[in-house]
Length: 252
Length: 219
Image (tube, rainbow over all chains, first blue to last red; front, side):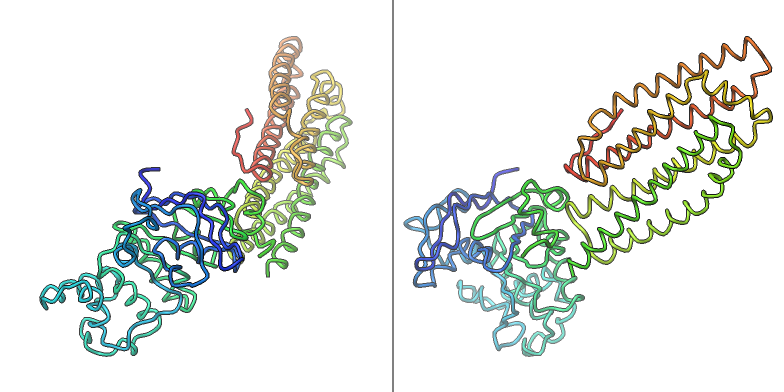
């Protein structure tokens, strides 16, 4: 493994008295796709939300241990959550475009970060939509409402919106669960393209999706990282019986 | 859905075993026919060959369906990979049984065959090979590699026996040229038996993969 981009060490997280993550220690490599799988409530979404401090918004949440991004503790003093969320973007389960035009959805982030020049914004919008494999489908209707796009297009728009602020890591929490198989295939192809330039971490319930798109897979159960390793090995011959029982459908 | 899949896996495994024991039976009966010169038994082995091929084709199709429909992973995938090897190797073992039966049927002075068969240690070699096949199938059935831990040494013994039989056969042929036709046929039988031992090793390799996930080569 080359230098990891995100590292967690003995990460524990509580929601009130309930322990949601238990001693999670993993290393995520750049320009690869890492999938997190496990049954509902195992902590996989909670874990990715730690990577860009989304859990800060939950009142009763406490964290022990460390999450390092390029070696710096993102929960350390002087760490800026806004900057972290710019560098570590997130795409959610349900496409959530703003009720604005396609153009404005993508331009929103760069504007918030201070870019006013319209030609610069035009270039960012085009580049982001191209990188999200959406440009050809929307280039003639950039000023139409994003709400008129199909579910799959809306999700790719959300990815374009994430890309517009030039992140390094893209977190995806069940990005295809609300999409049909064709739209899912497009997102999966896009993930494969994105890993050339970004680190992608995807949470998925769909184990075939994890095996198709990821280079590394982590299996979580009851808040613990039971096994983390190369996807081919995990799906051919995992080390842990718990992993094997889960991926072969014997529980979960 | 996964319960249905796992039930189908159990059913198909039983069918794979039934096919493998059918092939083992063909080899066993062909060797018995060779030992006794029993032409009727040899003919019945030949008759079973098309049914064996049919079972192989059906099972291969069933296993491919399981892959296409359920996308198996981990131990389920390894079990299917192993089962494909078991049916492929079993079909070859059964066909060697048919080839040995053909030797019985095609050798002209067939009632003199048993003497030379015994003299050439073919029964001993056949017993070793059949026990290797049986143990590989027991290991597959019980997912227990204890049965096949010595397969490599046993295969070495079988290879050695083939060389011994070759040398013995040569001596007989030099001593009495009238035995040339019978002996050359029997040298082919020794070769078929040696190949059957190799197939049992191939099955054993895949059983180890099925049980442990490790790919090893049994030499």
